[in-house]
Length: 308
Image 1 (spheres, rainbow, N blue to C red):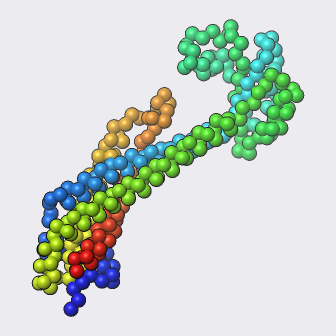
Image 2 (image 1 turned 30 degrees about the vertical axis):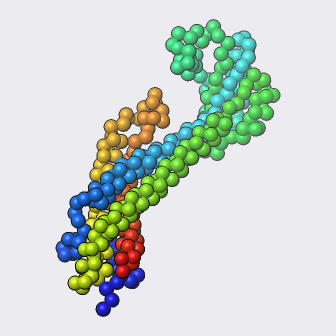
Image 3 (image 1 turned 180 degrees about the vertical axis):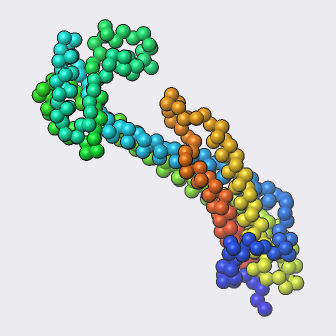
């Protein structure tokens, strides 16, 4: 009777079969030792890092959407003119905007609001009234938006001192940067999974090599390679799962310890998870178990073939 591990027999080592387990097979793999500690540590450390990579990716995606929505529907009109003409040009600009299709509303910022915008750079005592500061007009678009090129031509003809800023030059770089950071976060998740698979494969190879004599004896007494491989795959899969669960718990605790999102803190205080995004870290332990299952099964097939 052939006791060696065939590809069809290896395929029979399914995740569902591992859940049932075999007490006799579990005794084949030592429950403690270097390989056990390495598997637990690798799964816990990589999952801890994966939680932060996932949080970074989701946070940057959320911020990219917020920045795009906030800046896409607003524009600023800057009016630079002599002090005795500011009021007249501001009124003319508001009349132009009121008759422009796609503009939901427009209003001139008050002196207090403009001082508030400059306060972070110049302090609260800036004498706005005595300085030649341009008048700012806030423009909010409707769902369709307006024709920026056409509006600039109208303003050039009727309000010579007006300069329209539709925030496109600010919005595109910010959204592009956020999308790239999100892509780097997803790439980090893939690299973390690859490193975890490599370390678990190393641990499985070490365990199989260290138990070569035990495997030889088991073969002599009639044990099939499928029986031996299932023992190793099951033990390493569960070690990876519980190690990943520990790493996930530590990662979530670290995220909860981060400062809450604040306008003053900007990006650095918005790295936590929001809403249903808290579900994603709980997917990591099953994913780590699946990575361990695939890596250990491949290692068992290769090592048992070499020991034949």
